[in-house]
Image (tube, rainbow, N blue to C red; front, side):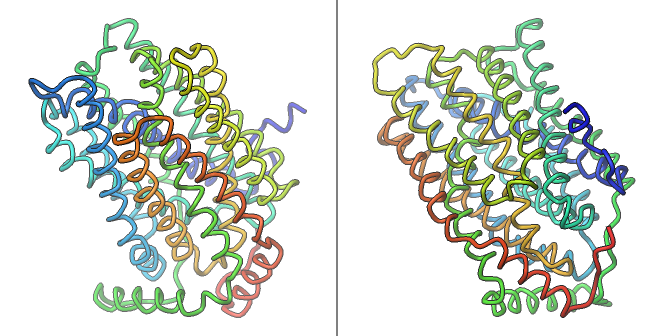
Amino acid sequence: MLHRLKPFRSLPNPREVFAWGMYDFANQSFTLLILTLLFPIYVRKVAVATPGLDEAAAGAMGDRVWSSIFAGSMLLVVLCSPFVGAFADARGAKKRLLIMTGVLCVLLTASFALIGPGGWVLAAILFIPANFCYQIGENMLASFLPEVASQRNMGRVSAIGWTMGYIGALTLLVVVVASMLGFDMGPPERWRPFFVFAAVWFAVGMIAPALVLRELKPTDTTPSIALCLQLAISRLRTTIRDASEHKQLLRFLFAFFVYAFGVQTIIAFAGIIANDFGFSQTKLAIFMLQLTITAGAGAILTGMFQDKLGPKRTLLIILSVWVVTCLAMVGLTLPANPPEWLFWIIGNGVGLGLGGVGTASRSMVGVFTPQHKTAEFFGLWGMTYKGAGVIGVLSFGQVKAAMGSTVSLALLTSFFLIGLVLLLRVNVSAGRRSAMRAQREHGAYTDTT
């Protein structure tokens, strides 16, 4: 059993897989510290704080501001993702875009330390491009998966990346908890050094992928940026026109779009939800530490069994866990003073769901993707995921501000339940055959891994 825990066992390219996973390790400082744990609460308790605004009004305004700037940044990503993906494939620019967006995200993240009380406008100005760069980088990272993995080990390699990300998150949380306890950095107004720390972590972690990752040369050559952009638009039109040849991919993307409403909402509002259940800032960081441990366990378990169970069956199990967990949170809002220990238990369901849903979903896209359209199809996947962030986070935040936690958590439950039902219509075998047929017809690459 222990030999299964050696992640790079028998991989033909362990160095490349490690470097690819290191980007997941690095960008957790933005995923966790900025998107989930610190920045939403900082916006809510510091950036929107103005004299004469009581705590309840500040909380509602904070929910509206946070959901709006998050959704606004995701909308920009949705509009740009298909063009960026096609451009990256045509020019062989995936690595350049990966590193460039990472560097810009690092600089903007460090600048969050400039945001003071009442500075929610500055928070919006800095956060929107920072999150845009982070999300585009995520698209580019995902598009490398079919190049560092084969059809036979794609689930395992995807899980390695996800697991390395959670190892990074776990390490980050240990540092944050120790800082809050040892240096009295629990109050949100003292969190500015954490934003600089997050930027430095991201920058250092990018060194390995910058040095090691290589991408396959494109079959198309474009002598100018203008011609390349024309080609990108043409390829996007071709992708849309030929979508009927990839029906299973489209079915999956539709199901993914719906349940990703919930995933994106959890990422953006997990800290705020826990805070609403009465967790202090230090206790919230400890809760996130627990959640990250269970998420890492979920990613490991998914990697161990996904290739045997298949990505669809794995996702059905994970979405079932999500539905049960969200229903439990709804129930927890009904009594006036629910016991705190119940939320600690329910949080394990959130962790398991987060740990498994990403790697299984990414593998499904990889199975349905011909190698010559990796950045393009993963760009569509990224556009779908980011579009879910626009709708899911904005609707949850506005409903929460207007109608309270119970109704908003019921809405969250429906995202996962409807997504599960839609996933039942996806035929994995037919989708795989469609991808292999397109790959043979193109003749650009062969799988020699």
